[in-house]
Length: 87
Picture (tube, rainbow, N blue to C red):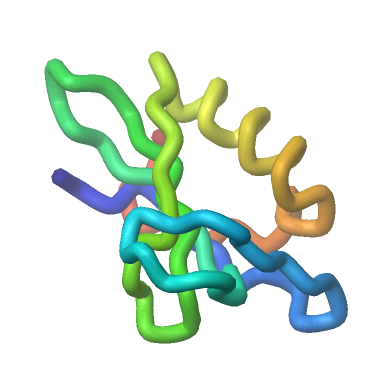
């Protein structure tokens, strides 16, 4: 997978996952990344402060993943750092 973009989420907003892929409850979500999995699509990863994946969401495009992120994390729309230019 290639990282397309990532964001450090607004610390004033508490994002807490009640259930996680790690099986630990609860975990604070403080980072997000959008990754390109090639033919498998795009993934939005919600991560803790050590970049451990708390949960993920599949998307058909980067634009779809950005819309999903804006819904899940309303204050992130201007915080994305682009790793792959032109994506």
